[in-house]
Image 1 (cartoon, rainbow, N blue to C red):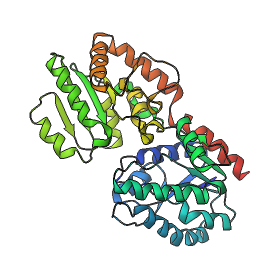
Image 2: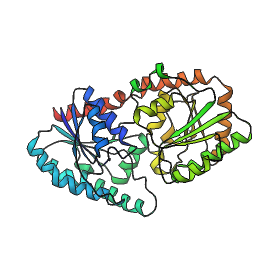
Image 3: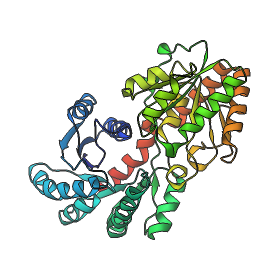
Image 4: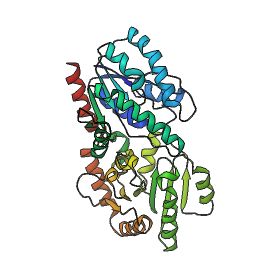
Length: 370
């Protein structure tokens, strides 16, 4: 099937781009031909082409808060011309893009799937703008979609109740590419390595990870903490790290380098709290930690829980996050982290690869087109 994926994700400039690329690649392995209609810079376009995918580039506003509106306007302008040149069996739309694409796809009888990877994550005035646009996109167009996908059961319940959806959303959680987490590349450091990778923003409790490190250091624990990413705390964290030899702050690295980096560490950190955007999520880092053979320590909420209870995952209360995460980390260090890490890896590889994630989506595509 020829599938057009319309997404406002900015390829080459967005830490969350991995989800779309890996999922599209998994759909291609199912026999589909996926191409994107999305914003991208040269790096992003090269990344997509390296995966055997294609992209129709869209240029959007660089002003935060206006990117979604700008993207929808461009989709409304570009999509009719694209559909004249190429035939697509089905389209996938993110909520950023559905306002520009829905009427055009409906008018040409092209079935389309709405995929929501999560509600807006901004804070402050940007959050109000994004939530208003998010609500408008769903209320106007969700019920005309051929199918709806969300990332978790909590997320599905949230959108179904908020928008009185006629269809039950299906699930498409994040996953991992097993080839990128080959044991042959694994070389665990001798000192216990703690790692968080993702946005280094205040809204993600990153400064509390520094508090955790301070307490571990005070207790004489032999460890090193790695914070990898970018965000509004980056400069402050770099300054803090200059006085703490146990803390390493690193700018974002490539998708392949993330796997190499994780394979050398022991414990992955999940500090995001239980606000709506996190407890309805399916965080990619959770699955990457497990695939790399890491134990996990984080806050206990639906977005961080795997099915069942697992020795490799230690979740703590949000109210006493710092003290309980310190205790959990110290306990893990006394245990066999190699054995625990292998349990994590085995579970993720059996349940949470991108091919697992793509299976239901591919089945839906085949059903809708046939």
